[in-house]
Length: 441
Image 1 (cartoon, rainbow, N blue to C red):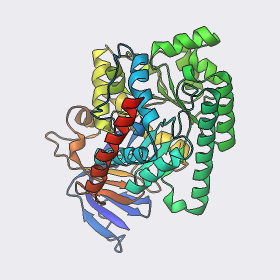
Image 2 (image 1 turned 90 degrees about the vertical axis):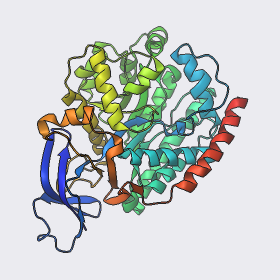
Image 3 (image 1 turned 60 degrees about the vertical axis):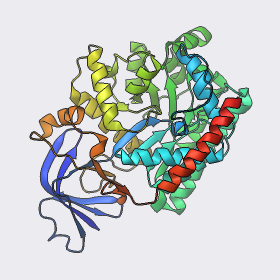
Image 4 (image 1 turned 90 degrees about the horizontal axis):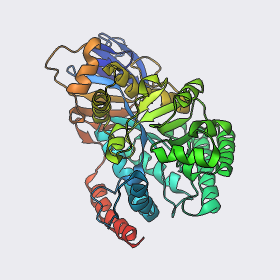
């Protein structure tokens, strides 16, 4: 049992700030929050916080850990004047170059950097066409090695190998969900990683693929994780080939529900937003990725009932993502306040709740002890009414002091609890080998 003494307890939505309070953790749960709890829990180990900010863990709701070794990639990349050419010339070549070793170290490095930036959980969307079977188990091993909570799935598609590739992706998604079910029964204390059923995007998944995806979701009890309308091409392709809006097409196969995660959704029609809301599905906004790919801005964010923030492979710095999401919204003439984006940051915890079946996102008894601790010296008073202003205009991931996942410290006093230098050294070697394979494609 651990008692965090003299905390500044912060909850994101509804925003609350409680000064000079204690938080007690036992195993993987919070058991109490309140003033002067030492006398009530005399057996607890006491860690003095000296006013540091303690908040429920930050969640990156959409990421691509397979891109972890792409930084500064030194392989010839053809011209990328539009989004589709960027996919073909860069990302679809990189994912074909992945093997078991490069995927593992990509997952490890991304997990380390997510934790260092204050994330306690990341929802991943994976692709490695040359290494499908067993790839998700390798990613789970990377998450577990570092101690990061997460979810992952395989991007089902027929873009490289037709129906055989599509069926292999379905099989990998289902097999991984079954693996997680076995682990939950046999080793519940190691339950840090969950499964989605993944697909790349509607324009690379034919109707037979959607049928298989719907069956996999029903059989495993999981939800779909898919890119939709990231670029206008996805919409025009759906209209031309199927005569339907992309989300209407997914809903035709029963693929929209409360566990569904739609990434991007920039070019959804208003009636699709209404459908998304009716089905209680999530839309994950990735501001920096959208800007980097020059695909446009989602002006309909305020109309989305369940919206969260992700990065789409651009790291896992969620405070940076919050800032960009807010500033881009303002630049686009949006009228939503910073509280809307604070709620989107919080909503990643609701995604975890729906999929893990346990409570996240509060500093209250019974909630999962995934915590991010900041050593932030506020230059002005910090309270619930101005919390969003502090996060959007002041705090940064550089202030992350400690991270707890399931009640266990994985990053403490600005240092990892495991030796990370050898992991980075190995990753640099593995990255160069992957780049050479990529250059040959």
